[in-house]
Image (cartoon, rainbow, N blue to C red; front, side, top):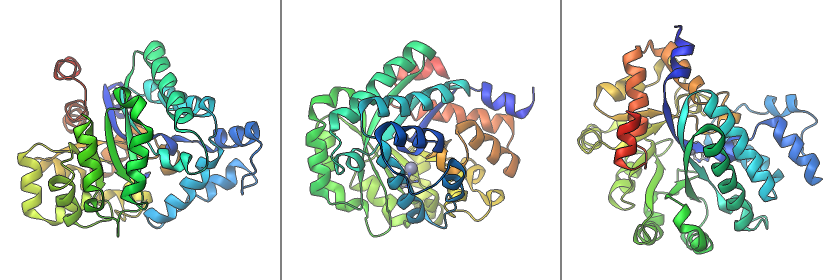
Length: 326
Ligand code: ADE
Ligand code: ZN
């Protein structure tokens, strides 16, 4: 089979996906119309044309603006269902999806609307595709730790349906240590922990994610490669890195996909995985990410299969379920 069919047929887990980042311009327009919201763009084409970013913040400004069309639980259901249908069609068997409640609750959308819409889509994905999923509640790091605590309190009635907490948004200037206490509180409630670290921020932020937030995975982690001791530590403990090649290219974390460090990570013994991050904004879903980096770096099928195995091994599924996928 050709490379594309091989990649699509490879059973995969997706571990780094912001559900708000899967909002395609077509659905953005449909929801704007349904909710009577005016968008600052005349057309779907104009929206896509605006997706040229020179760094993370450029993207985040547009991403938060796009999320303004999401108001009701039906909107969140439709958003997530579009992602699950697409992911299932390209071999994703399990998805651990992040959502940013503060992006919605700060606009007056009740937490219950957001999470109930996502949960109903997750149930439908299981019924329709046999696809499993989990929720990661992400705190926005440009906001305060107190705001994160308030969000965790809002989530209390649903904690049995939330697998982990995460940390995303503007990295530089908002180090992991800012959220040490709220991550400890989440851990005490039995939640797993992930954090974006080393996307734009320095290796010191990856150390803080490990030592202060006690994370179970590092989202991105690219800049860990600047520190040999850190690489050795991540490799020795088998820490999963959720790497996002097309995102890295679109946000100028790497200048050229041909220079992407994914295979260097594998060669260093790091448990790297491939993920789409914000597929509607970065030009590709998870299979597109495998394919693009495979072509740019000349990855072998063995390497691609290793990346797919790493995605299940790094998931929060029970060990026996992981074993059944690998
Ligand atoms: N929110 C959505 N995508 C993100 C990314 N790649 N980094 C930080 N915050 C994000
Ligand atoms: Zn991300």
